[in-house]
Image (cartoon, rainbow, N blue to C red; front, side):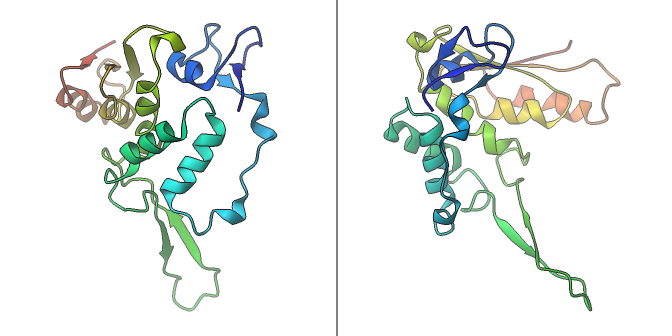
Length: 199
């Protein structure tokens, strides 16, 4: 992908590194690329590739101002040895009910990451991509990830920040969610770069 622009307008055009470092576009929109439909991954070529190879191919296509070495390092740091399965998101065959002719069914397991949340799949990668940007790519010298949560979203986001990335978790007041008491305690266990507070 060459450039990204806001979903709310085309006045700002930027590289993928600037879009990743900036997060939300200045006008409040999300960054997208019009080139997404023009480039394709040959699905038939993926069957024999590992998760790591597929991630490198797809991310390399989407984020063309990252070097191959940067993408490879991000993929290795995010997924190698950090998930319960070497496959990262394994496809598991389900047993058919006895006496049925139902087609074979598979399920993809997305809970093998560090916080057991499906969000780990994306949030293992994002801070690593952010860490390979610099102030010249837009934004402040240090990066702050702000989450708002009453459950596992904040925990997953906070668990993966690193290096120059600081994290702030905002959680709702009492009575909003049954998982709140568990969610409140999670962010406080991360590190000195993690700050947690109520509304």
